[in-house]
Image (cartoon, rainbow, N blue to C red; front, side, top):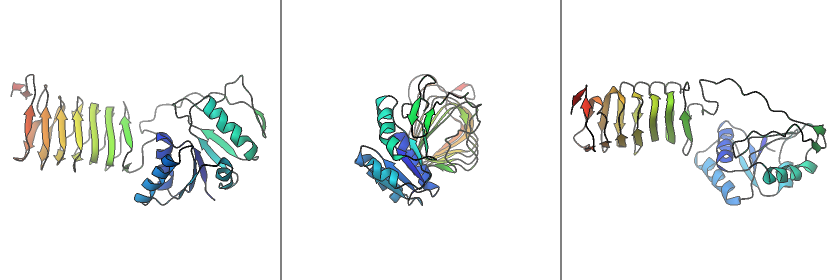
Length: 276
């Protein structure tokens, strides 16, 4: 018997399933695509996640696999897909079961106030709630770091803790910031905002810098660096890396290993306000 059921194993559903499994929860998965579910199971197995994921294509078997009272989360588009899921679940649920959802199209999982949802619990209506205040820590921030395939965007006021790890994931900084000692293998995009000190990028990563500020001790090893300008200083580019600068200014107090080709494309380049 599993702790939670997920219906709709798309991009959001697959990431959510892996997050729960990473914390040791056993989940039942239901989707029309057996291939999508098998891909999630294969990924969880490869990462040796402690929680067990079980795939179902039959709704009755899916519901029967859940511990009672059942908890089911629905992640499907609104409209007919959601209505079909609810119609299929209605005769299978019992008093005390919980049905919730975050829609795959990004809308809130609510029933309009003028529509009653009639089921075995009786007539109920769900009303919109006021949005919660902004949290400086993204609510979907994976604890400790990003796993392969995960992505995270840090907006204004949002930050990561110190010693955060991105392992084959994608991090975009768009007005937010990172803590110190961030280690990244994957993709890093800095649009605005800033990085903390001693950011380390390595092992075939790609770094794109279109603005913002780099903290002291920025280190790039065996990776691709593409920059159109950034404030900050103290950079090291080494190993089998490549560095391309397209306009703007070069990193101040930067060190480039002899093995690193540096390309300057178009425009004027400045170091400490002086043309390079």
